Structures are given as structure tokens and as C-alpha cells.
Image 1 (tube, rainbow, N blue to C red):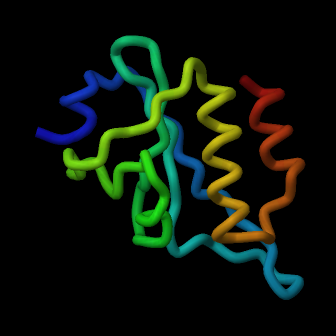
Image 2: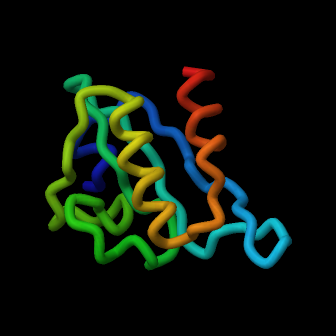
Length: 105
């Protein structure tokens, strides 16, 4: 069993965007994804890497059944929370990236 089975996920969105550091675009060493649970709620999970392992309510991988995810009522709320985590790890993320994502949804 994994988190996709446990929460009967319907969809997920990868948030492994490039960010700017020292005037260069970089690919993150760790990334998050937004997961749409079968009951309509959303949560944030670490897609790969380990840099988000210290955030409460963020499963460390799809195999992490010990971490109870923090649930959000909709995708926009989950994306906003995820972006806040992302900016803490990678400050080079531009706020416009979240604004663009939310506008597309």
C-alpha cells in the first residue's frame, strides 16, 4: 500500500519547477507534488529528494504511510501551502510562478 492507494487519489500535479540561483536557472534537488484525494481534499507530498522531510504534514514519499498529511480544501490552497514550503528551501522561486499556476487552474 502507498499514499495513492490509502487516500484513493484521483490526480496529482508535480511542482518541480526551475528556480533562479546566482543568475542561473536550477532544477531542484527535491520537489513536491499536489495530491487530490478521493474524498475531494488535497495534500502536499514530497515527490523526490529529502529536503522537505522536516515539514509537518508532508509525506516524505508515496510510500510514507506514517506521516498524516495536512489536508487542504482545494487545489489553490494546497498549491499556496506547497509554494510556501518551496520558497523556504529554494528562495529563488519567483512569486509569479505561483500566480501563473493559480491563474491557469
